[in-house]
Length: 173
Figure 1 (tube, one colour):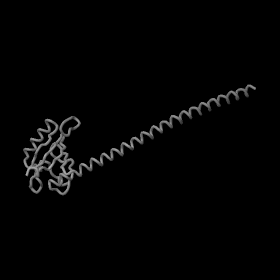
Figure 2 (cartoon, rainbow, N blue to C red):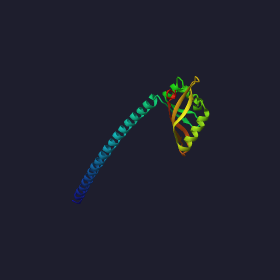
Figure 3 (cartoon, rainbow, N blue to C red):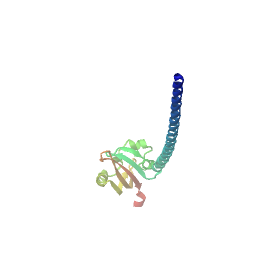
Figure 4 (cartoon, rainbow, N blue to C red):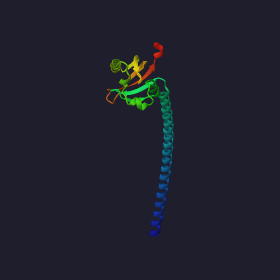
């Protein structure tokens, strides 16, 4: 009789444990479902953000490449980091590689103007409506209007320049 009572008691304990386990499993499934739904929402947000970034990048690239104005990014020493097709055309080169083989100072008709422009930009961070004469690779000159900004490194020091150049030769005639 005592053995039968012990078995019944044990069976009751096992049933309680099984009920507790089922309850824990349901809690776990509920929390897991919430987490999965949360992750799914975050994944959708990330996908949307990625699509927006790609669209923004495509827009920037289209504006950069299709501008008739010259757009450049250079190091402080004058090495080209990026140029657009507008600049390639007006300096008389056929490819960007041809431009990259030179330094920006190679295109200044008067190298002293670059020194003057650099001083102004280094001091104030920007030079707007700065007129310069550039020399094409064929030796002809073009009057240009520049807006130049400094590029800073991680320590806040000038590391280079980025600028927009507009051909104003026709206005000067």
